[in-house]
Image (cartoon, rainbow, N blue to C red; front, side, top):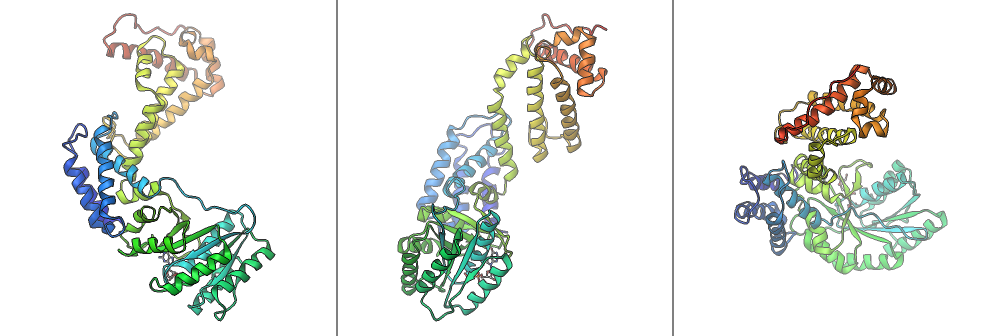
Length: 448
Ligand code: GDP
């Protein structure tokens, strides 16, 4: 499995933190050593040099020691998150969109070694852009592999995009020039130029590519890289970038059995982002490169990550302390009630993803569904209240007429409304009791 080795190497790091209360300078030493080893052993060293791994480990360590506690999140989960964030950064952070020229046509030049999937990617990219409503044209510039031209024609037909061909006897720069003229005539939005690759980098290929690039003045020069490329990936990306200047990369065969080091290295060695990834042989198997998803995949812990993120979100959205004060005060009203219940519901759906929330770990999916259902019912009733009623629940406690109206407007029974009102007062009381503030917390009886 791709990244399998790296993932299991990192697991050792998290395991060493089990049972710890917080992340400290001392207790992250061992886990950080594991992380470093995992990165190096995962064959990343060939792509991302030792200094990069060192910088990576340094950055993670610094953040780990400085990180605050998030209620309900264990230190090992926090470290996963920090490592994740750094991996995302290493891979370029945000999604890098394709750039389009201001005037038609946008020219995309594809370069890369033979067999990496360039021809396939050309057609996939046309298909991808076509789905975004852009008209495309393909140019068959791979003159050294006769089958490549036929292959592109077939794929072009398959995705419904015209292919410009000029055989194998014409110079690539000439084909590019003619292809571009044709694209202008056809007034297409995007012209994608497939070029010839060699088994290895050589001067003839680079010179040819330079000529082609000069003729085309492309908006994008994308290096197609096979995710399975071994240690030479760093040299490959660097050379292409220096020699012809790339604007980004497309990583192919991510569906395959590879260690995936190339995903980590491209940005680091070239400063240019991976823009798209190929995940299979079908024309649909091309998608944007999401550094965050890739990082999650490397860590094999998408679930923990989304848990930590959601916990952070909840903590940010609802200033927990503020809410606590509100609950304790006599002013706790239906607006707060709704907020509070929604927070709990959110925590509930998190626990569906993973059963890690302290005290909620054993919650079953059925219970979560039940909680979500009753939240919906409560929401309907609260929405049927007037703003005044929401702020002063006493109004509802005192008036059967009001409760009846709420029941009718929300499509619930009067009994359900009464229960909800009682629940709110119970909550006030319970909170007060909890905090040892005993005075004035008697439950008002509902008058009929
Ligand atoms: P080129 O020499 O660079 O033009 O490479 P091709 O486009 O001919 O692709 C070489 C082989 O890799 C073909 O058999 C493709 O079907 C296959 N291939 C290309 N992209 C992918 C991918 O994302 N996943 C998988 N599994 N195979 C791919």
